[in-house]
Length: 559
Image (cartoon, rainbow, N blue to C red):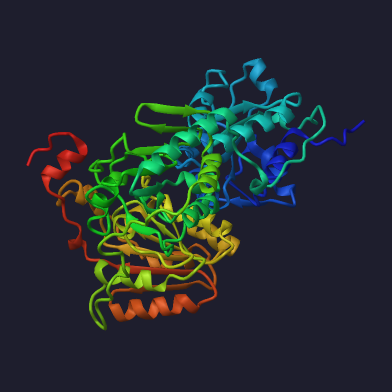
């Protein structure tokens, strides 16, 4: 008698679809065929067949940044190891990516047979420890445990806002589940963490004492605000209290920068506008909402000077000020409680607010960074998400003031060049509100440009700017000029979409300001994907002083 119960993989896929995820990114592979088939058969999911597993992981990262969670499906061994760099990046960004892996059947494993995608030693758990290290929770599924385990895995992935590793052997994958299936809630209806009531009350009372004693208060929200889906709660907190806030490079765009309380980008001595670091660091009280990552790019090469005794950290599950720590207190409950208890405070102001970049250049002037970025800023409109690749473009774009309703995504912490192109695919698929615009350097783009063909296959409409200076420009900045390893093979970038089968794309190569203006005007009105190659002088990439390189790398680099 054939069972009508869902199989293990059908249950997994449908349980994740309950969260409202509508795409699954991956590369098909034989051991993962059960997952692939279940995804393809699910009417709530679209299978996105990426160019390779790393690209798929980057795309899943991008989708999770906008929607709040994502699905990644690859095969055992070669597939999961190829994806790991992208999954690690998602972990660094605190993104719940459900990492599905199909493995050889238990019959193969128990007989000790040697199969492909292995090391030839008959051992079938060689890679699990590696993959598990990229995640906050893991599970080996069977027909008996799948219902309970999926609840545990989903709960932990959302509670910790980090990837989850889910592996199932091929034979178990196709067996019916034992037990009654659970119908889950959409992501927006799930409370990710609960506070201990006594600890929450004590933490709120403690924080309110500090608030009432402070004459000047500023907030620093991190990317954890968006990872936990708390942008509205944070906005409500600002609107109720009038507290001024700045963002670090990692937290840029957590809410629209048009908010009247927005000060600028705080990153130590590289803060923008000038003087912002002094304003923040001299405040009587700083709300560190989510936990500032003291990474070099995020802190102006560790030049931030926040006093631990004046900085209240509202962590994911704790509150901390100096040596005082309250555990079992979740960030959502703290934001809600403080919004209820606090009244308006004086809004701190910087002497010179951020403003739009001045428009420079015209006509036959050669394109360069000085005339490109103001035009990029000027084309942005509500609903857009601006994506900045790791490298010099990220350094230029972080201080740019975003117009009303414009989001921003980058990978400042993990910093894996090539991330932005596939991540744009995932962001574009999740962004229902407007356009997705990415700026990438040619060096980064060469690593993952094959995902352009996948964008064409699925009909998405990003606007892609590729800055062509024929160099790894950011590497020259932190080393020295003259190394052949920083030179790139020059591609005919504007011809790539057509070569990869993309139809009805607007593609252009621009080298003058007039050509750039015309291309942007076309992109702003074109109902389709756009790919614009912008020539940038190689001479813009200059090494920073040796003293700064030694400060960053602590390596005693010789002059």
